[in-house]
Image (cartoon, rainbow, N blue to C red; front, side, top):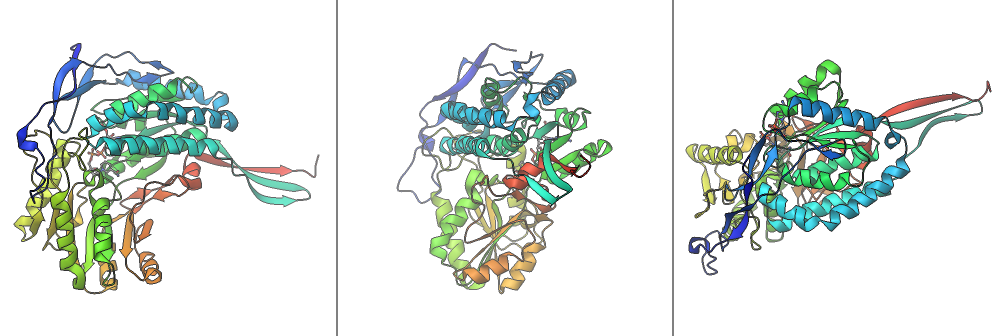
Length: 511
Ligand code: NDP
């Protein structure tokens, strides 16, 4: 391992300078480049201490392909140590005393808030998102911790009679595996971690190979507060995720990622009947009715479809628009896309960064090529960003494709939105429901009552009217059906997913 390293610096590149007068999609400048300086070392956390590192791999900035830092590659022995540490901590007071856990969660929220700028910078560099969005993501993590720090146990009494009572009491599951993807490495981590800790579990966290750094930094801060072994991490590029799922000391796995990998996780978990929460992405439809105010809603629809460069499980991924307002909506979205500022995340003017990794960029590019090959029109976008080696794709608006085209049927998970005309709301709902996925869906109309009724007919769990995928609300459950998975995160139901509910039958008559 080389001791030197890289961090972000700047140099001017006139090819990327903003030209305020141009009508094309604007690229930000000056160019953010990589220069070599000392590289920070990152460590996994096992039993409250930094684990020794036997090997490392490069974590790259998806805007420049420069190395941000190197992350440890966990061995199976490291995984054993992490699980053993979690198992040992789960037998201690941590599992039994909610008031201590709540007090420590409050301290965790303050500690993360205090280093949010540092965390956001690393997150922007490894994930690619604009630094303002990275700050918002860290802010959400702080709010989730603070929410669970305030949350009381909800006692359920099922029966109370003169000679007996029956209570449902929640108990922790044990050591749980949290497998987190690369699109929202900290928000998705915290949607799992905060309720898991609140419920008294201990955890082994596995971040995605392309985004481990912010997670390791954040966990090191949490370890300064939490009892040793409550939080443990493993990282790597290979089979460590599957080994975590299969490990005998892991009692539950909460996984967010693709449907094919979710199916593999489920089959790896089956022999030991492990509990699972699977959040597997989606292909959310938004349906714009004839009476919608296109001018008012187009920016909101655009923002939802292209936030995080479209790498959001509950982004709008298919836009069905009533034929009477179709041209107006397509033109409005095209205009917004043309002026959207694309650039590296650390540049203050960037509205949309690169995709996180080469496979994802190539996947979205292939869907766009397929759309054109089958007669579709790309109104704007789809190109890379001049002057950058990274995984940029400018936001693309696509029409003239059928429901059978790849860009409509598959989850693009990137900055490309197909816009499709319809003639009746019933038809649009049938077409929306024809998807294998069932995560979210929205109806946009000036008739809110009719829209709410239509929304409830969508085969999806998270339903919206005149909005889509508002930021996660700790009080509201979030989940999926069909190929989008099962189980819930957040809300009381999210706590239930990290708990065993025991039924306590007490005969008071005998005593
Ligand atoms: P994957 O679903 O393959 O990976 C997600 C996580 O699972 C990573 O941490 C990965 O780490 C881990 N993993 C992979 N295989 C296994 C396994 N057998 N057992 C346990 N863990 C495993 O996502 P990709 O990165 O390949 O992205 C592909 C597609 O997934 C995207 O195009 C998008 O459609 C969807 N996706 C959905 C997300 C969502 O929020 N729902 C988030 C990210 C992607 P490792 O590779 O080290 O094993």
